[in-house]
Length: 285
View (cartoon, rainbow, N blue to C red):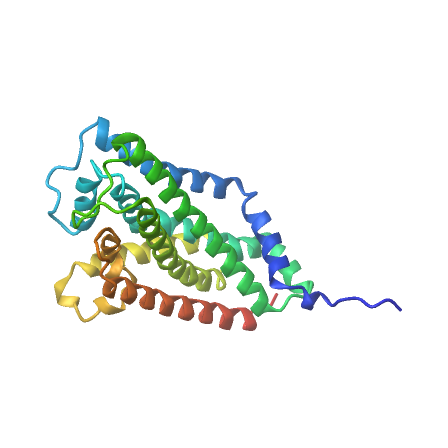
């Protein structure tokens, strides 16, 4: 009798390749990635040829993003960071929520999730593949935004308009290093949102419920962040460190805010995936 490898022994890389092929064949995934990639170009063109930086920048709860927009008007290094900061406020969480909703709730509603479980593939391995697939989508989104932002900034402002908020002029390698740090940091923040979305997605068969819940949570967190009376709650909010992204534009880079934000996001990832796993192992079919 020929030896056969049990389906449960299929490696995660093979499963992940199949998952990524499925993800990047979805038209809505490609549409969202395209819109996110276009955001830095729209911002750069708007700042250069339309009205310039927003008037009254520096007032209100989003003064960090407005300040970056002011600097991005003539600085090719700031534009990709400003675009990532703006995307982090709503658009990147939306992309993460949509991808997480498709990963579990969407497949469950269409009956395709059952085929994964009948393979059989262990539920823990299934969750790992889904989480990594969503993480790849987030990484592609942030990387494309950064690349388009750098190219747009250089085309509009020239290679001479590359300097940090500290007034120094970094070399090209240092610029790429700062952009890479920003991309990885933002990817971790958005992946933390995706982990929570996966936990919700594991509990429902309605993808829109996942998207609505995540976007509602992001908006509520933004409101809570500006209420001084709830300052005791701020350390537990994921968006508490998002303004620290601008620190990568300084020379030297202050690490405290970035490390704190990375640690908080890591906690969200661990909690979200743990809740998703707890639901997966108790879910029938």
